[in-house]
Length: 216
Image (cartoon, rainbow, N blue to C red; front, side, top):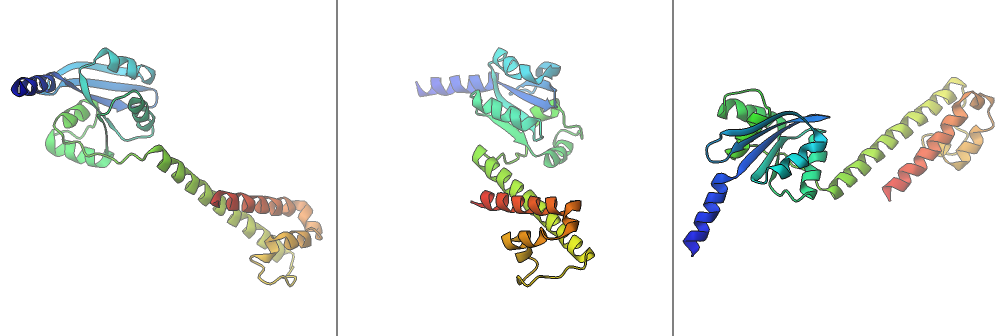
């Protein structure tokens, strides 16, 4: 009985297919080949991205899907995962090109090369972060952007004060205290703030609040 089950699994593996996807922004080139001999059984050019899931459902023998990491490929990878495909490989672009040159003697990484490397288990995989990691990365990027914006605004205010010959009013460190509540009130006493620096001061304080909020 065990031998029969083993033979059935082996027969299924030998009859299953590997699919290579060369993903672009609006369309994808698709190559499907047999696992046991590498023969291409189906090739589709410029398949609209919205029809990829439909294509895969029409070919239920596809057991492995391979694509190269890119901005357009990541959303498709998430969609395939949600659809229940558990053997989806995303390759590292630079390493894939190097391996393709040495293994299958081509420097063109297209759907045919991806399907062949995946079939041979020679595809160098890229790490795909989960949704929680993506969310945290985006939060860190946004905070870094806001900190850079705050620094630019503060530098602009410093240049205004230096140009007008205005010195530290005695709050202590001009780097920090001038941008506090008391410093903002002090800056409001000068006419040159009407030329745009007052808006910059307000924006700097607003960005400061956002940065503090995003840190929590």
